[in-house]
Amino acid sequence: MYNRRYTGKIELAVLDTAGTFCDGPGDLRSRWPLDDLRGCKAPVVPFYEALKAFDLECDWTTIRKPMGNFKPTHLRMLLSDPEVAAQFREKHGRDWTEEDFDNILATFRPLMSKYIVDPDLAKPIDGALECIAALREAEILVGCDTGYYAEDSKNLNKYLEDTYGLKFDVTTNSEKVPGRPSPFMVFDCMLAAYEINKKVIPVESVVKIDDTAAGMYCGNNAGAWTIGLYASGSNDYDQLVLSKPDYLVPSVKYVADVIFYEIEPRLRRGERPGQGLAETITIR
Image 1 (spheres, rainbow, N blue to C red):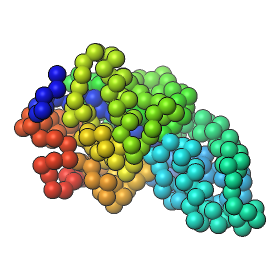
Image 2: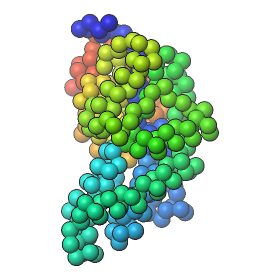
Image 3: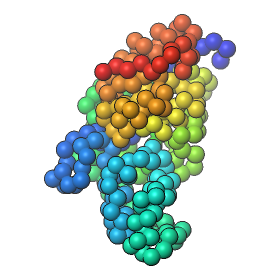
Image 4: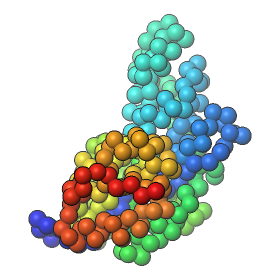
């Protein structure tokens, strides 16, 4: 049971999907000429194509700005971007409406379902399989949270299991749980973990791993440890450091070592997430 000073081990690691454990950086300009060579392309491509279908040319940098949010929220934020809103007004002679939003979202959804399991985009990032195997060997439950629709997330997870043997212990449902930057997807994974082993775990025993600032805010708001991945996904180092994670590392390849050799020794000393350090620790 929880007492006011937790000194145990990490019990649960909650990972984002694209840019965190799959869909890493790579040069796919042969397929998408605007490819910026960063990871987390699976959401970017369908947003680009859906907006283009409505005569809106949106660059990948702009599309990436709201990354980490539930996809309808992401689209709404894109349409509300001043440059995108002005472009819509110029193309259509009026401001966008809820009907326009619904139509673009309806175009986006099947594209998202298609690209989320695209072999070029669903491939695990270097070190991801080894990281999850190491966590599981240490009896740490591995959770998955994402801004994808539940059905798309289910299909991606099935693809990863069938193709690479990668399986998550718990997942969250972004259609039912308020998403990042709120803490509830972390809490949802904690509840699912409880349903597995009927063991109450404190949030200090949870690590949130993500390539977006929104994901870091999610973990921080939950009171969990946070590890930001600055070279494998959508947000870069400067964007992530502003969200004040406990640790910044290039990719998921480094996550297990951070947990075993950085976070757990601090837990044994009675330290808590976000405390005891003046600044984020960066491992390059």
